[in-house]
Length: 138
View 1: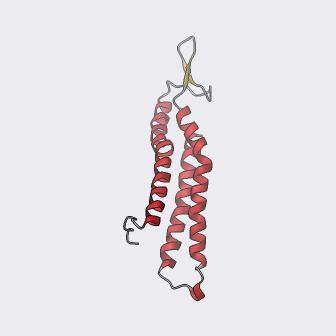
View 2: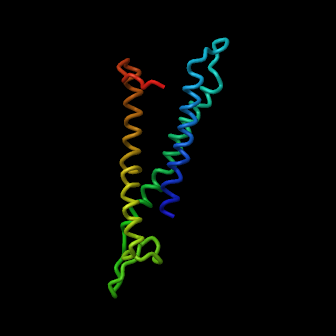
């Protein structure tokens, strides 16, 4: 469940971002007809917006499930079980592997997403001021 709830959104959002980037770079160099924006650019902008909206929707759940992997309850007999799912033994080596995976997801979701949003806002502000960083070649 941890892998599906944290990795699947990354793959879906990544695929949407790659398609949006491809559409934008493919059609950016083509001249617009009659002053209209090409439909591919409109779709690209929509996909970028959808990516950020999807991140906004899944962020709380991915963050919660990543952190909840570390919360175990100890019983009187000394055995430890995951508080969210009592069928998972916290002393099991597989759970230790999932804790390592959850640590990576904590770097991506609770820390990486706010950094991504901050970078996006910073970039927009600098573009409006005219002090934007040079763009990477396509």
